[in-house]
Image (cartoon, rainbow, N blue to C red; front, side, top):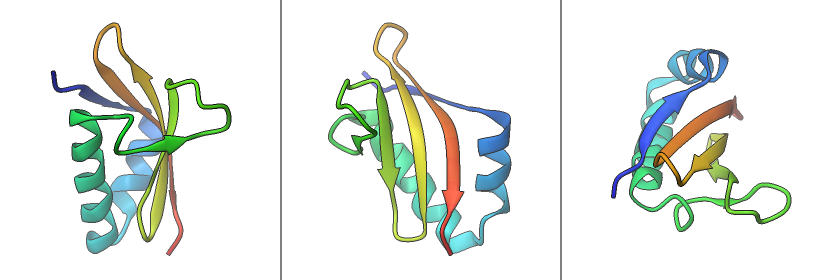
Length: 81
C-alpha cells in the first residue's frame, strides 16, 4: 500500500524555496519513501521505525511514519546547498 504524504507548513515552505534540482531530488526520494518508508530512509536517533530521516545530496528531511493510517508526515526539511 502506498503511504500518503503530508507536510508541516514550515517544512513545505523550505522545500518549495529550494533550487529546482535539489527540490526535484528530494521530491523523488519522498516518492520512493511513499512506497517503502523503511527501505528508503534511515533511522533518526533510535531506530523505532516511526521517526526517520531521508537524505539526498543537498537536503535532508525528518519524517514521521504512521503505519496505522499509512501516512508520512514531513516534519522538517533542511537544505544543505
